[in-house]
Image (cartoon, rainbow, N blue to C red; front, top):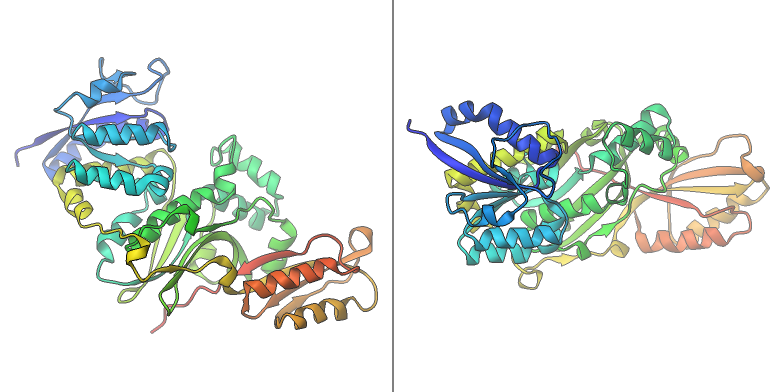
Length: 440
């Protein structure tokens, strides 16, 4: 097989950029043998051309001038690894206008400006490949775009942020407090110095916007997604949940209802400890997809890091070079919501089960008081825990799990419980998500 040389330009020579170069250098012969393509890094653009990297480049390849890449007509594939939604957007637009196909791992940019970028790509006859944007080395994008194309996707349940999953796993397995688990994640490189994007749930929401758009065939924006992070998660609640048979995860959920409406949300959720997602620990990602013909399909692997993400980027580069990405991209129909039957079901309309913890004064009549509030809001209790012994200021924790209840009813009950003289502090409420079982 005669080899075809494919020249690649990369913008962003940080951790992932270095990983891409490393992987291409190490696997160039194997890739050529399998595909007939000889990948060659022809230009790398970065603002810092002096810092030592984990990989070496030939002289003249590293530059701080992006015009060198844009004006080189021999480079047909350009990789954007800058991140963010400002400069990265201009970089991608300029790449497309310069006649280059784009490969990116930038989930935030696609979640916020995907429609404009896709439209520009089609205008200039180019494509955008983004396998690395949602789950690092886990091939979830190709799974949705091709592997499950014959199915209607009825639900997605995903652990999409390795930082949050590492923190919650440590809190569950080691009994760590949130601050302690976060510090450990930062020490080991799983969390940034400023972890807000991860622990707030926004990173998961970016990824859910991309995945749900592909699954639903409709343009989903961040405004469509309810987002709640893990900043306020307590070790007490993780321990109580475990006693009731649950594990706490930060879940990204896309759930289609029978009337065609869709619930899109990211929030901490208790799931049954025998569910497959409950066993996903540490910095790993997992996505469980429910498809009309295939049933439940689960994708699992490393959701971030130098080499897992580089693996997805190089896979996209090859897919673009072969011509597969252009065909798939041109057939990627993401219609405006107004032209589809999809209605976004807001969080207030959610019906779910709930975990509630109330710190009550240790006195007679307390149980009757909060039971009355729950009854007034038509909330039925499925289980409860109350241990002997007093907590701070002579209080005792009362923990209950409810049957399926509208979110509006729970919110009204929480307001009523907080107003009771016997309640100390704000009641804690965490959703319980019953992920369906795929049985014969």
